[in-house]
Image 1 (cartoon, rainbow, N blue to C red):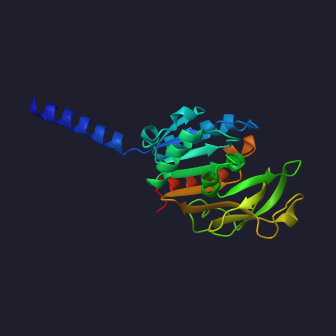
Image 2: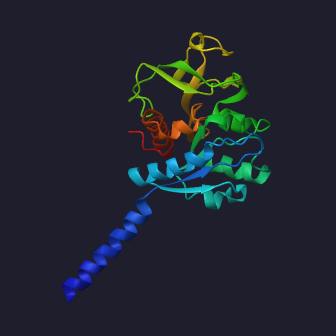
Amino acid sequence: MRKNILVAFMMMLSATVFGFAKPRVLVFSKTAGFHHESIAVGVPAVIKMGQENNFDVDTTTNSALFTLQNLKKYKAVIFLSTTGDVLNNEQQAAFEQYIKQGGGFVGVHSATDTEYVWPWYGNLVGAYFKSHPSKQQEADLHVVDRKFIATKHLPVVWRRLDEWYNYKWIAKGLHVLITIDEKSYTGGENGSNHPMSWYHNYDGGRAFYTALGHTDASYSEPLFLKHLLGGIKYAMGRSK
């Protein structure tokens, strides 16, 4: 009898411990501008990543959840193809405090087409969108850092189809992971040093961005999914 009680207690204790230990991320996909259809496949793709990599995933388009008390539950917040002005002043302040207290940020694709009049966010995500070519094209991506968790699995030259962003402004001090070869497609406007993915420590937290992920097909592409997963792990503080 005592043995059964002890076993039950240990199982309950283990469940409690593991429940608290399992990290959680928030996928935020609110759009106040262009709405990417790929959000519909991107959200479940991240949920599946969590199931396979021992982290829980909450998803929302509700900016009212951006309170410091709520954000503290998350190791990272993922802006999945957000666009436009998605947070009000109070929500912006809460998110700033979250990052300053060591939170993580992941920006995917049009996260750079978001919050143009919030300079703190611009520095967090690392750039602001300017334009893209009129059609999706194949292009050569150069993986300039193959030691980082989000790129170590990638080939030196990664040729793929996507919508390739040009930027009106790029922050200083970014650790660039991937650049695009503008000679390999038409419509590039950032020259020979045209970044497509980067990370940096910012204002107490961690930020990762990838411009990839416009297409539905991206979210069933193993190389891209592992790239995104690596960025999420970095933002969560699990990069080693």
